[in-house]
Image 1 (cartoon, helix red, strand yellow):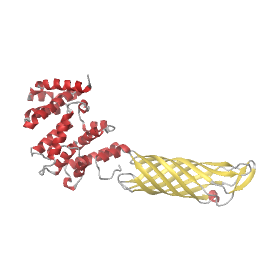
Image 2 (cartoon, one colour):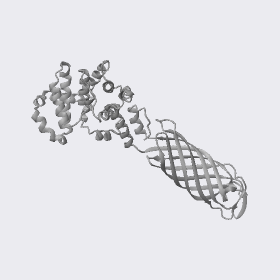
Image 3 (cartoon, one colour):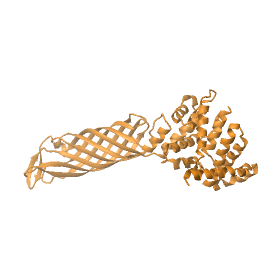
Image 4 (cartoon, helix red, strand yellow):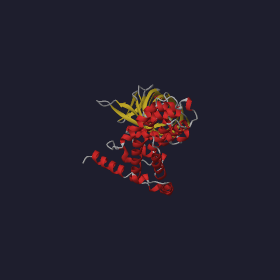
Length: 407
């Protein structure tokens, strides 16, 4: 027996057993109000199957009493359902009696959930469903289930209603949503025609909620600038400085790993100890690897400014001349750092930014028997980076959100 045959048999059993739900009375509905927490997935699946069957059989003949009866039963015992809500909205538009009171502040949340189910985007579904307190029969979403034709009924009804000219803008947006033209629908919801309306307020509230769900973003940047020494290390002169930083950021804090590379010859020759011989050299290469913790003193959708503290391992390589093959002597320092970083975001969606950074460091390079290499240095850099969160950006993309995607 195939899965398709199994669901066909279950559907027949449900159809032959609908006489029980047909006997629902007002007293039954009232007595069930205390049993919402007892609504199992099997019960929800049964009620939804009966509801869908009645819609498919009775709606073309406009026999709505039995349909409304099972809708009341579902919402009383099992809570909100995206399927019953979709039918109520579309049928009211069809009969010319739609108004915004049919939807609530969570309607857009349910429609986002509706879209993500069908796009196969399951990662945040549990959080969305928990937020809007849906009680959906999961078995209805198996592609081989014969009851999937109800979903096609909703799509066809919505696409037919889309041609009507007497629909208010919010109703137009909902027909597009249920007709699977999500991007056009979300564009209408963000338009000035729906300013301060229930759908738009619900939509904006959802966007803010989604941003709160994902406050964390990954951050990667490259920078190029200059290394400017003072005190004992002035003998080394100024040097180009290039580097990379990778890390994470939140609304207030950021943390990152950074690596800097400096090159070119030293300004003056300096003395190093090479196997007991004092040797003058102008050879210079330097690497800094460290960690930084930043606190944002300003952070909005266009700009971000943070002050940071860091600690790094700093090393200079100078050449050792008294061997046949040149080798290097290492001059090491544990280097505390503090600084300021400012970023300007170029695009409200992709997180690309440019900016500037100033870092002041305290170094004491070991060089026994040679020139004193203790001192401080300033690094000034231009930075080019990317800050993003893939899941957040995917949800905002599915919402066709035209505002700023930064938290």
